[in-house]
Length: 336
Ligand SMILES: NC(=O)c1ccc[n+]([C@@H]2O[C@H](COP(=O)([O-])OP(=O)(O)OC[C@H]3O[C@@H](n4cnc5c(N)ncnc54)[C@H](O)[C@@H]3O)[C@@H](O)[C@H]2O)c1
Image 1 (spheres, rainbow, N blue to C red):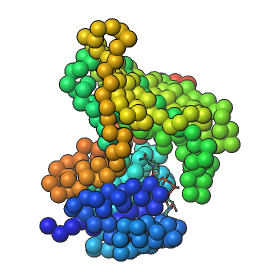
Image 2 (cartoon, rainbow, N blue to C red):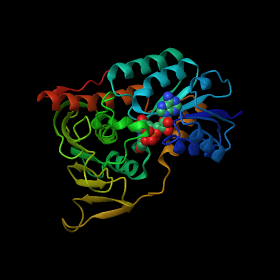
Image 3 (spheres, rainbow, N blue to C red):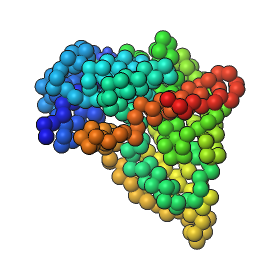
Image 4 (tube, protein in one colour):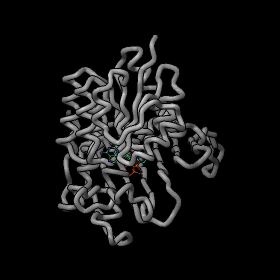
């Protein structure tokens, strides 16, 4: 079978996508695009891609490209994804799928219209520790879930992005949508859809940013589970997505930065005992994500993290932003 041609737009986060396409046996990285042409050229040269360009629309006209990774600032996800789908390309769009629900709807409609695959890069679903956590919960190791919590604690002081887009007041990128979508998606993936949210937020650390820098959201899930997601982009600590899953027979603590997860079950000798299960921290999670997209294309099977899944996570995040702003509980939309 001829290889599928891949292109990456956005040469920073997109660098991880490039590695994924180079290493997948069914794909060949053929083009890299970045507004900063030197960045595009550097990444293309590092991986033997023939084309480096600063004009992403050039990719739309190329017949040798079947898959495009959109790894540009969040407001560009929707227009770039829709145009790529319309040009007949499959798309892997970085998280968050988009900053607003109307944009998500446009993206879903474009995928439906064209029949091309749209995957949303909720990469935590490919982190070995979180995968093991989900597997253990599905196997019943901790009984019935009743409370889940996750946090996105990530100091953004120096992570403003090219041209400061993350703190641009015109974009108003809410950290709970742009960053905490990881933590929200994780608990949603494991515990199911949320139906209602109540949230508080404040703005005490990154006071020169145009958005609140700390939010805590509580959720009620469809199945009666309750949950909490914390997001702080001003916190002074190493990045973590520490997550705890409480079940009727045990508890799992899982993190994106620890080489193990901790499992407590009621069968252990004392309440101070934990089972420590090693996980592969060196895993290239974006490459695993790309392998899944390519397998779905090659085998003709549907994606688990498609546009509708991406949109449900954006909806749960937006409900928290709205609740914090209005001081009222907000229903979480799940139908797309
Ligand atoms: N999955 C993850 O864990 C993860 C981590 C970081 C970022 N992200 C997401 O990846 C995306 C990119 O984030 P980043 O940290 O790489 O941002 P960045 O600002 O560091 O890089 C974005 C790149 O896109 C380029 N760009 C901007 N406009 C462009 C255009 N019109 N055409 C071509 N290139 C353009 C910029 O020149 C820049 O090199 C964001 O959506 C972000 O939320 C995901």
